[in-house]
Length: 131
Image (cartoon, rainbow, N blue to C red):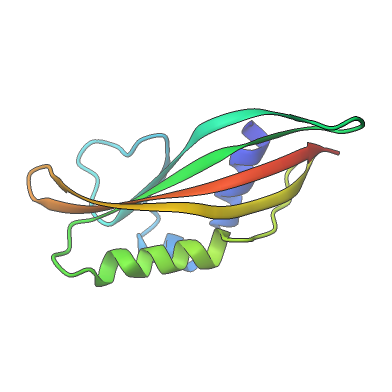
């Protein structure tokens, strides 16, 4: 799992998404009081994949995008950068071969924290096999 998360985070280096959110991308949760916009990613599910000859893993990684802008432009731009970077992407994962990493779901929400915050939850399904 660590190798996959390292590859996911490594793919962010120099990306439009990382630049757009000012480097504010976090694993599992954002620090309290973080400035908007930002992104958090985490593992939703992870399980074994087996064929007669291969062993691997499949699961879902979710990216949560947060924006406090009244306009939808900021969060939809973040979403576009996320899709460009990860949907049907290739990644180098230590000790594994990536079969796929693809978007499967988008859920949009508005959360009332102290102000109205837009939240897009974007699920990506992955499958890897051991090298």
